[in-house]
Image: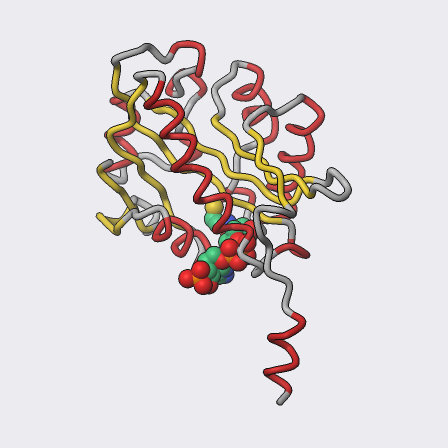
Length: 196
Ligand SMILES: CC(C)(COP(=O)(O)OP(=O)(O)OC[C@H]1O[C@@H](n2cnc3c(N)ncnc32)[C@H](O)[C@@H]1OP(=O)(O)O)[C@@H](O)C(=O)NCCC(=O)NCCS
């Protein structure tokens, strides 16, 4: 009976309540960086603030933000980076940690060329605590595939996507994107990859 009542009251997010955008203003980016701090207990699990903001300023972040249509509040976001082939290789074999990725190892969106193929690193998904477990993560993850498709339509291709998993939620998210475990990195984090 209690379970039934709880299920009835459970909020499930659907696309009508949420606006997903890849156009990130400086103000929104600051909120995103704060959300990282709120979402991870270990500072090693997210980007150092200045480095993160520098990646944004250099147009090196592929970000999708979920905005509450009712009050324009940031609800959650996803960050992917286009890595140079050399850096992707280091991450794939587990030799580098996320903190080893330098700004020069990330390709700017302005540099992506038609008829070229690139490799993506799925870095972060974070949902504000009050919006968790309402399927918002799933909505954002679906948007990643849509974003990849938008690039494909501009003849910019992604051949593979990789992630380092530091939490159960991260494992579930990578799994939803179709990534499979391919190894461990030097710190024992699971490496997941999908060939697209
Ligand atoms: C992980 C996180 C993004 C999930 O977002 P969410 O909106 O609560 O997720 P959803 O409700 O859309 O659920 C998505 C799927 O992941 C699963 N899931 C969500 N949180 C999970 C968790 N902590 N452990 C295991 N599975 C989880 C759900 O069961 C669901 O699977 P289903 O669709 O097959 O039922 C969110 O909890 C979060 O921001 N956590 C803190 C940051 C973090 O750890 N990010 C991941 C590493 S980058």
